[in-house]
Length: 376
Ligand SMILES: Nc1ncnc2c1ncn2[C@@H]1O[C@H](COP(=O)(O)OP(=O)(O)O)[C@@H](O)[C@H]1O
Ligand SMILES: [Mg+2]
Image (cartoon, rainbow, N blue to C red):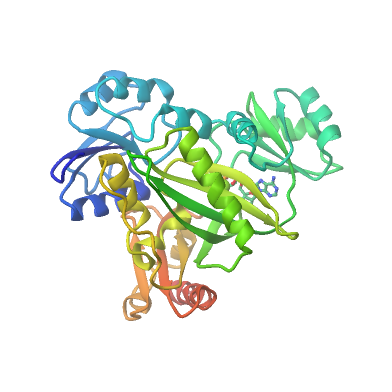
């Protein structure tokens, strides 16, 4: 067990790392960060900041020697980086889940092999593959590049009249996956935490509403059929146990109109949809990550208030610095800003969490508040 006062190494310096560090600091831990970026959300508040490429294995080893355990806030940690670090200190969650989570073909294949419900899919390496696979899967369908996609980037919907050569060339990738299009009713996530001793706890279902392929609003609790919740939690337990995940892992699901649950993707780290656990639950997803990777007992994931979270994208800055007082003077509203200076359209700059009598009401209020904050 890594006692308070130990040093955690974080690979990646974005907002997920920053919120992790806030939880870690409260419990007396130190946080060193490694990432290629300067003046980053976590770099601003880490004890020690390494600014270097993930491929610089000598730097990675130097970094590993300054910490007691390493975790990460994004799943595209290169295998060689994780291996170099692991030779010096534990990396949690370990490499097995990283390999799966950073490659959509490996991800979908392993989920299917575990008996979990995934969309029909085919592996695509050429326009010929794509033509054949569209014939097998039918239209509409979705093509996703196998690596490095996020927030809907690196994917496209293929329709009956799509020009397949143009679709394939626009992806600019060597390998992709073609998936059946799921006519979902809603999207939701479940977030699990698993301790060094195999203990387990989870949050959700959390309903996720997207806008322009980017998460817009998340709400919890949500009344889904008990069978759907159970299927989702079983999937979480199965994946986390199979890959011996010590840490936090999120699964994104589709809920179909007929009440079926389908797995979309996994992320072996805290997730944007879990930000509302900071105010709405006894122990947040970030504190669970800390507890898990340090071998501490997991915290209670019990929710004490219905909540909704709205992302604050750079778009909110379009007409100038937002009017924060609208949030600050409202006791049900919790403002989080990530310390980013350049509010580009679509960039996640912060979020608002709102607590209310029901999550639906919180979702209405949080969207209203976000609209009031933006200057016109
Ligand atoms: N097979 C599918 N059927 C229908 N919609 C999909 C499918 N795959 C993805 N989407 C939509 O695109 C969004 C982004 O896809 P996802 O696979 O989660 O990639 P990302 O890594 O960008 O989050 C999903 O949240 C969902 O709204
Ligand atoms: Mg997704």
